[in-house]
Amino acid sequence: MNTETSSGAPKQKRFRGVVVINRDNCKGCAFCVEFCPTHALELDKAYNAKGYHPPVFAKPEACNGCDMCGLYCPDFAIFGYREKAEETA
Ligand code: SF4
Ligand code: SF4
Image (tube, rainbow, N blue to C red; front, side, top):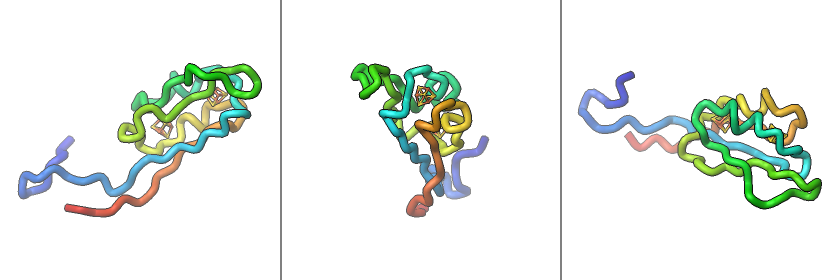
């Protein structure tokens, strides 16, 4: 995939991925972590109120907002979306 403009400058992403996590709805199954195609999520070392390890948004720069995490979560505890980014190139 070509990631450069015709001038040779790196192309800026026109959107960024954002994730919303409801920690206390999570039961720590890790489906979101396993199915995230960009490995943007990790399970937290800390526990939530139910005694499970919820995900944390460990690599926000990697997220593409695809919402695979939301599609696989059985407890509606996470979802992702795309937010328009400032265009700088
Ligand atoms: S929105 Fe997509 S890329 Fe971002 S954390 Fe969820 S599954 Fe991963
Ligand atoms: S898929 Fe949902 S319930 Fe499972 S760890 Fe991720 S946020 Fe928690």
